[in-house]
Image (cartoon, rainbow, N blue to C red; front, side):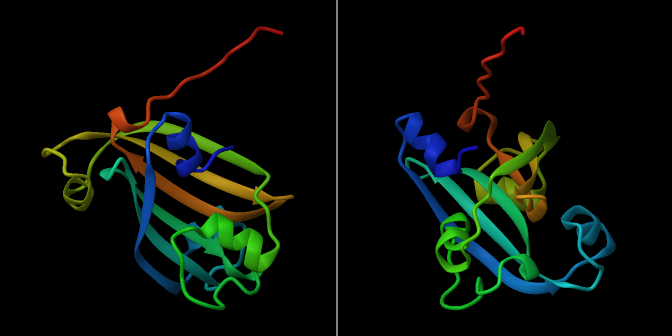
Length: 156
């Protein structure tokens, strides 16, 4: 499990992240199911723009189950949510369940990532856990050339 920044540094690129939007919202039925919480519970919504070498590389939509991270909202909001989970809330993410697929960019994603119309994106939907609890449910939309997937597969 690596953050976007860790992955970019391994590729000898300079990462950055910018918080575009954040707000506390009520969990819809879908989000409650994904986060394994009750519908209507307060969750934190974040939208972040990830860049590599100052070029937009990915847009992320993230939902955080606030009851599992008390203290997260204290202080200024930050784009470095994983760092703040560890420092402010003493919560470490130790497992991630991920689904990867190709999707067509929305108009907003095209604008944020400087793409042509109907561009393909690599979408990674994640459930990030601390122990048995889902803390974060997110979807990250990558420019395909910005995030090639490399697998090391072995037969056992």
